[in-house]
Length: 50
Image 1 (cartoon, helix red, strand yellow):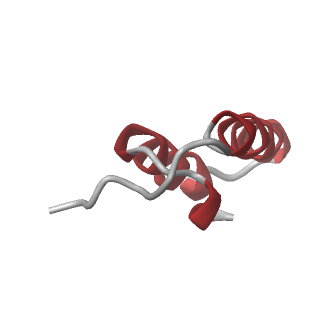
Image 2 (cartoon, helix red, strand yellow):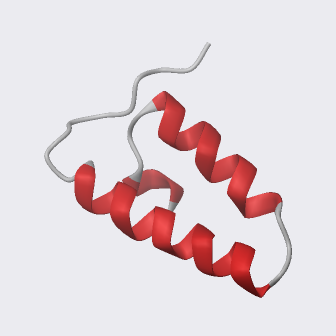
């Protein structure tokens, strides 16, 4: 799933949300992945992290 998110801030948010436990946190995580993946469909590659 992480491969579908292509911005640095999106990847940071993905990492933050994936560490949280609990039903509502997991629901928020999957909602974020869905919306970020749809938003980043047209983008080419992720910005390289340093």
